[in-house]
Each structure stands twice: as C-alpha cells, then as structure tokens.
Image: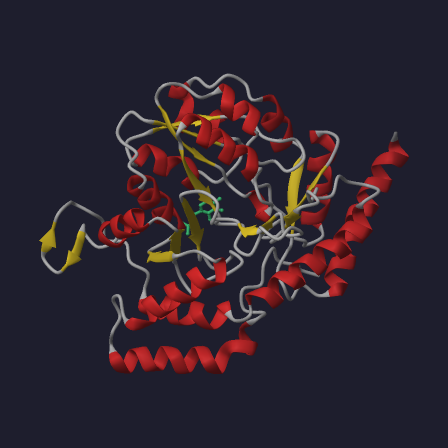
Length: 377
Ligand SMILES: *Cc1c(COP(=O)(O)O)cnc(C)c1O
C-alpha cells in the first residue's frame, strides 16, 4: 500500500464542474491580472475571518514580506520570531532589511514562547512574528500584551492555520490572523485552502496598512503609472482567486474532517506517542498532524518503518532555523526546547479525504514498530 502525505486531487470531483466553468469564464474574458474575481475573493476572505481588509498577493512568502514592509519595519530593525518554522518566515524579515531574532518555543504547542520572546527584546525590536504552527494558535494574549508593553507590531504567519480559532469557547473568540496588525496566508496547494498554483493573502483591520499593501503588491502604484513609492510585482492571479472562491465554500467542512481524522489518530496512538496538544481554548486547523517520541532513535526508527511500508511521513522541521548555515552569522545561543523537539517529532499523512483504512494502516504500522522496539529492550 502507498499512502501519500496529501492527495491534492481527492477533493476535486466535488468542485470540478464549478471550477472548470469559472476558469473558462476567465479565459473568455481574459482579465488575468487583478480581474474582478480577485476583489471578490478578497472580500469573501476578509468577511470569513472577520477582518476589515484582505489583499491578495502572489504567495505566502510575499504576504509575509509585504506585511513586514507595510508595518513600517526599516533597515536594522529586529523582529522576534520562532526558529521552528519554514524559512519563509525569517527570510522575508531579512529581505525587508530587518534582522530575525530567534526565541525558543513552547514544549507542548511548539509555538513561540512569549516568555523567551520577552527576554530577546532590545531597543531595536520593532515587531513579533508568531507562526501558528501546524494549525495550532500561538499564545496570542501573551504576545499581544508584550507588544502593547513594548510598542511592537505583530504579524501572524497563518500559512498553516487558516480556520484555526483562538478562545473559540468564549464570546470574544477570533480567527488566527486577526489579532495582530497583519495576518498572512499561503494558498500553496498543500495548505488547508490550496490554490491550483501559488497564491497568498494578507488580512488587516488597519486602513493605512491596507493602503500600503494595495500599492506594494503593484509596483507602489494605486493609480496606473503614478508611483508615490517603489513596490513589487506580487498580485494574486485572477484564475487562482476564482478557484479559491469556490474552495472557500467548503473550508469549514474540510477543517471538520481534518479534526475528525486527528481524533482517530489520537485514539489509536495516544498510548505509544505524544499526540498533538490542543490548548482548551484553541480550535486546531490541522494542516499537519504531528507526533512526538521520547528520543531521536525511536523517532527515526518509526519513521523508517513507515517509509519501508510505503507510508509517507515528514519532519516539519528537521533543522531549526537558528541552526541553519543561512543564520550562522546571528550566533544565536542554544534554544533548548526547540532543539529537542526537532529531533523527536514527525508528521503523518493528513488531508480531509484520508480514508479510515489508511488511518488504521498507519497506526498499525507505528504500533508494530513500537512493539518490536520494546520487545528488544
Ligand atoms: C507555506 C509556508 C509559508 C510560505 O508560503 P508560500 O505560499 O509557499 O510562499 C510561510 N510560512 C509558513 C509557516 C509556511 O508553512
């Protein structure tokens, strides 16, 4: 049996007719760049999140870069972020001229530890950039408190957390991405809301940031050939926007399915691995389902056993960013929690249509390996 991490076409039959009609319509109109479908999808995306504004951009990396610039970050400024994420989170900080400063992570949620973030604040710190890793909300109350106290901007990397809710069991609950100054999203095909190509989005409630973003994504221009500033070529494709509008209507059902799958994995694995911790006030979006073992040797053996049996699996992320060559010049001191977590976690196949038989086969395969390992001891 071969089981992939994601099956990007499994949900396609459900939306095929609508998608193909909408693409054909755009081909007939040929409004490929910033067509009306982009604005329509931006409005829908903002409304879904309960945000005032949304700006479509070329990908999730650009969403981060433009959000950082629109927040007024300047050369030499420092932004505190997590080292346990994809490099897009930090390379965009550097590309905007600022310096990423890595703080350690929470041992349960693997998200930025607000206490260590506070220890890393200097006179140059201008922003905090939490990532809602795997789809579990970061500790936003503490992060926002820190930001208020030190007058910092907050940019939320929601590439993995679209539909995740913070304090979902309280009346003032919020979607991730709507608590800081900006929330950034990726529509890379394997994300929870995936395009048929690249795409990204930024949401904000701040009119000034919104106006900056509208100009930044289109060469600094709000009116054709009028440039009050320089910008970038980073627009969300009309074709992708039209497809994403259609997919958005299914996103709640898909998130529910991901959560159901996580529950089934939990039930099967809770006695042999550390299953994902979900803080009681958080609603997870499960872009990734990640388990942890007591030590690296066990983790590696289980991973190998799965791979040998045709079951895909992956470590997000095997080398924390502060340990990468790209950041050697920062001379970051050891971040102990992060370095332990990177060596003991890995992620299992996760997508809304993942069949029950696959879940069972994956869990059985892990159990088999763990039983063999304990028998040997
Ligand atoms: C996917 C991802 C990004 C980048 O998104 P792209 O659309 O691929 O540019 C940024 N941050 C995190 C945490 C991601 O997982």
